[in-house]
Each structure stands twice: as C-alpha cells, then as structure tokens.
Length: 109
Length: 274
Ligand SMILES: Nc1nc2c(ncn2[C@@H]2O[C@H](COP(=O)(O)OP(=O)(O)OP(=O)(O)O)[C@@H](O)[C@H]2O)c(=O)[nH]1
Ligand SMILES: [Mg+2]
Ligand SMILES: [Zn+2]
Image 1 (cartoon, rainbow over the protein chains, first blue to last red):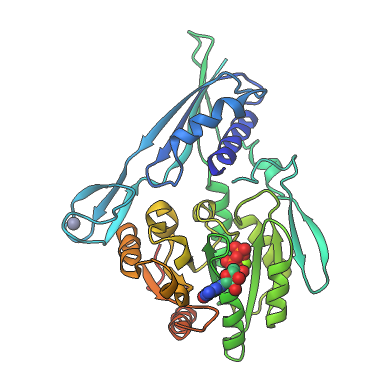
Image 2 (cartoon, rainbow over the protein chains, first blue to last red; image 1 turned 120 degrees about the horizontal axis):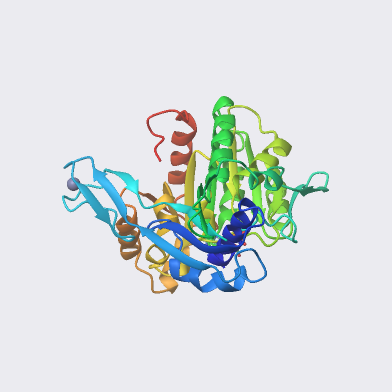
C-alpha cells in the first residue's frame, strides 16, 4: 500500500516537472533504511505509469547503503536494516547515508 | 506522501473541531504549486533525441520543510508535542484518556486525532475533558506536517502546554513523516507478537520511546517481554521502553515520569536528539 502511494507520488511529481515531455527512463535513489522496498516500487511502477507521461519508461533503482561513523571507535561502518550497532559494541553512531528517497534523474524524449 | 500530489482525486483530508462539528475541507495550498518549481536543470544532449534531466528532488523534502516550521512554532511557544504511533488498536486513545484524566490538574493537554474516518476517537478525548481536533485523512494512511499545521491553527494550543498527536493506526507510513514533534512514541501491545520490532524496523528505529501496552493480558498469551525488548534494542539500541496496561493502570507512573521529564526539557535542550 505504502509503496503504491509512493510510486503514484513519484510519477505525478516527475510528470509535472518534465512539463509534457515523454519520459523514457527514471532513476531513483532508495536508502537501505528508508523503509521503502525497491521490489514493491518496481512491482507498481508499470501499472501506475500507464496513461501518464511515464508510460513505458524503464525504472532504475539505485540502492544506497546505510553507512555511519561510530563515535566511539571512529570507524566508518555499514549497517543492516536490523542491527544498529558497531562491531565495537557502540550504539553511538552518526548516520552518513541510508535514508534517501530521491528522484535522481529522468531521461526524456 | 499518499496524499501529496493527489489533490485531484478523493484523497481529501477533513479537519473537525468536535466542539462545533464545523467541517472544513483540507486542501494543501502548496500541492498545486510545488511541482512546477524551477529548481531543475535541463541537460541538453544534442547528439541524441534523448535528454537527461537531473531532477535531484527529495520525495520527503516538502514534508520535512513544513515539519521544521511546526517544530519552530512549538519551540517558540514552549509546547511539548508528542507523535503517538502504533498499529490499529494498540491502545493509543485509551492511554490518552487515562493520561488526560490523571494529569489534567498538572498540565494543559490538547489532542490532535488522526484517523482515516469518523470522529469517534475525538469524541472519546472530548469526553475525557481535553480540547481536541480530529483530522480525517480519507484514503491517506498517516498524518503529514501540512495536516498538522492546519490542525494546529484550529487547535490553537496555549503556551507551555502539552500537545498529543494520535497518528493513524499504522506501523509503516507514519514512520516516514516527521511532523515537527519533540519526540516520537511507538505503542505496541502484547497481543501483536514479540517480533513486531523486527517486522517494522523503521518505526522502532525512529521512535524515542516504546510503550509495551496490554501487559495485563500476559498471563493469557504466549509472549516473551524479554525477547520483545531484545528485538526492539536490536533495531534501536538506545530506545526507552515502558510496560503499561492502559486499562488496568499498570506502569502509568513510569509513563507520567517520562512525560514530566520531557515537558520540563526545553526542545532545544541536550535531551533532544534525532
Ligand atoms: N486488556 C487491555 N486492553 C486494552 C488496553 N489498552 C487498550 N485496550 C483495549 O484495546 C482496544 C483498542 O484500544 P484503543 O485505545 O481504541 O486503541 P487505538 O490504538 O487508539 O486504536 P485506533 O485508533 O483504532 O488505531 C479497546 O477495546 C481498549 O479497551 C490494555 O492495556 N489492556
Ligand atoms: Mg485511537
Ligand atoms: Zn565502533
């Protein structure tokens, strides 16, 4: 449900921004911790794009890894969506990336 | 997000003051304009028919911007606002009713109720004795910062007060939408299964406090509080956890202590972290 609405929102937002041009490719950036499942967006995309300026467009999703700096041991680490701990045991992290939810670029005809 | 850019369909939000039952259509004044912004750059690649346009826009940017405005509005009035989130039926309204009953003499408490439909929860809060505004989100599954801003204008909470925001019952979308609150509280009940934090990690990751409600039912079900807490700490190591029964009154003193601490902490204070 969540990704369906999100996908509709992406399509409406892109269609307005390209001002009538036909869109052939959309590149999204989705962070690993954004709470959005890329597969689900892919699943909805074609159906939602039908009848819009994005009909038939290909969809490219770039997943952004969740990275953080550990304030205790100063190392840069990659997090899974389940475990927010540094291998040194510290939970004192500063997030660098992983929450992205962006439309990066589109290709138009 | 679910209502952003969909202003032309039936996804209209209604904001109701149950005191006068005066209904007003909510229409996001920015929605019609924000998409036609001129912030994008066109990259002309004349060697082919195709052009690449670097849009580089954040899907939550508009919500986040308005949320920061709400946050400033609260801070300027020294209002402590809490965003209460849970699955449907975990006990948000019951906990609010109890809290209002017990702390009414101590604090001015007002409530913003988010539901897809009906003013049932607002009527309960009204009966409990608090000023309340109901936001009906229609097909939307969460509150966003624009809805909150509209509801706040109607609610007009006094300075130095407490504003409780009951989000739409849903563990997914509300986690994405900052409203400008001081703290996020997730309520889960023991009947939902101890693995909820692992299934909805985003919600538990953004929450500052987890309330484990309906602990009065523990003798009747198979639920390990220890395992549930371990799951929550796995996704959010520093999350605070309070066990309650909103109906039987268990653990409420600990919740009130947390609230008092939160209210006395200025929003700019060191206790505020994101
Ligand atoms: N046994 C038990 N039942 C509870 C407790 N807290 C709430 N309930 C019951 O759970 C049901 C749902 O409670 P609500 O307070 O309406 O839950 P809610 O989270 O506001 O629900 P929505 O707004 O629909 O998402 C009601 O029947 C409550 O009486 C509790 O601590 N123990
Ligand atoms: Mg409720
Ligand atoms: Zn470390």
